[in-house]
Image (cartoon, rainbow, N blue to C red; front, side):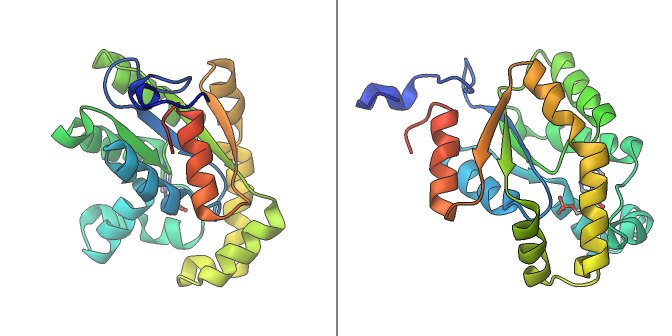
Amino acid sequence: MVGGAERETMPGPGMARNGRPRIVLLGPPGAGKGTQAELLAGQLGVPAISTGDMLRQAVSSDTELGRRVQGIMAAGELVDDATMADVVKDRLARADARQGFLLDGYPRTLPQAHTLEGILTGAGRELDAVLLVEVPEEELVRRVVLRGRGDDDREEVVRERFRVYREKTEPLIGYYRERGLLYPIDGNLPVDKVTSQMLIALGVNG
Ligand code: AMP
């Protein structure tokens, strides 16, 4: 990156050609996606959309959706793709997501990636970048166990979430790499360093 004030508004490699970017955060459980999503979304002026938060909200409000997904989440499994498609379609249709968004926790399967592509193409839009947050597995287990949020943080559930990540979500890395959208980010650094790497990848001055 070259310095200079004009760079702040210049589209970078992963940046939207017009307006604000549409970004996906990809990475294993405990990689710090939630923290980074909030920080980055603030910098970019787009909403951070966490499907995990939306589902936890549904569980705590005891909605029909919440009752349906509670056990699945507690076991560290994935909610089915059709349910997630409804959740994400509704959320991306809201006004605040029209000009860009940062998705945290979606897509998590290849069918979900296809669904997202369909939603965006249907609206004449496309994804600008997929930021892959990379952290070594033992560090991840340590972080997730330390976070100790409750039921879904018992070690066996944590291990199950990793297994599911490797089986269902990791194939997305190749999928997005082939499309030229993948930007690997070293997530094993202090929080602010991770954010600035992401901004650099997106071509925004951090
Ligand atoms: P997260 O906070 O992103 O780790 O999500 C917490 C839990 O919500 C996951 O372990 C899944 O059970 C469920 N979940 C969140 N996003 C998705 C998704 N895109 N597909 C399937 N399940 C999801």
